[in-house]
Image 1 (cartoon, one colour):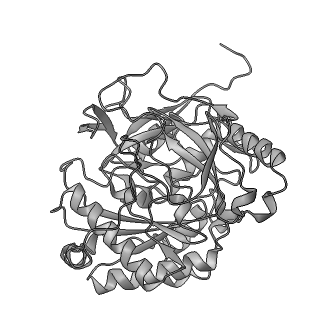
Image 2 (image 1 turned 180 degrees about the vertical axis):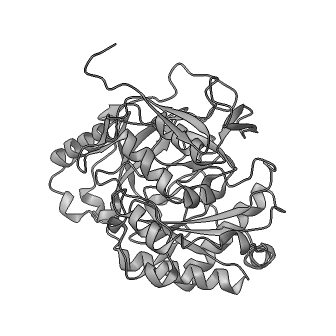
Length: 423
């Protein structure tokens, strides 16, 4: 045994013993938070965290090398999981399946944190009914250059649309730059219907707040607006649930709010240090969410009224791939975000003469879903650069292939991985 390594600590939580290895390992250097500190945080807010993630199958997003390294996503529950961890088998659109973890109590929270999980990433279904979501998720994802006040304005429009449809929205900070609004629904509709309802909500928000909000799926077409990300309701997708700790230097927390707080607070106020005090003083603003179950009938009726959403044109090369309406060039594909930002800096140095013409939303650095981790794609939209000055597509500065050596039926390949929300 390494003499400098602290021995494991055994916690007894509601009668269950949970082993915390390397309890003094520093996870967040800036506030000096250790792994044991994170466990104690989740125990302090356990009622709220379980209201968001308990009883749901969960993807384990693990940070074994700390917050500055890329996490990996583990769908399958470890074989040696304790008895207090339930499991259920999910079948994915790719044709694969996985037995995933289902936590139901505070001991389960401590167990997943010990694995290196910071945020909780549950599916929008209960373990007892895997095909019918009971939660519609509204993800307000701001484009670069969008301020908090614009996000808040869009949130209130979304609340108005939900109210008109007989639904109640429960807001929370995403723990990064955006806002999430959770909506409890009766588990009566398929994933396809729930996603259609979410897309319809996004379209109606855009209709009521043109220029502020957008439902355009393709990032280069959004401009400086708030994207109402309806695809977070697609099957196999997960989002950080309430009270999740996010991998930002200040240990920020995805925190439930009342609607009165949405405009007067800021995401950076809510951290591992501050949220337990708030929770002890005011409780969980989402305490009534499970009593506000609604119907999707109104949104689905509006979907029929609006008709199908406009689809992007397809290329004429026979590939069937979508053809962008914007003058895009691709800069790099990388394994990590620092590599992506370094490639972007190199491109900007090469083309310093046109950089002043770019708007914040013209620079697209997207985290893309790989087989078990994120990879990054860097593109630049030249819409604000005069045609005569636009650089041509060059050889990629970096060309990482996340699918190299991996073969299975239906794997997407590097051109079609899902972009991840940055909110």
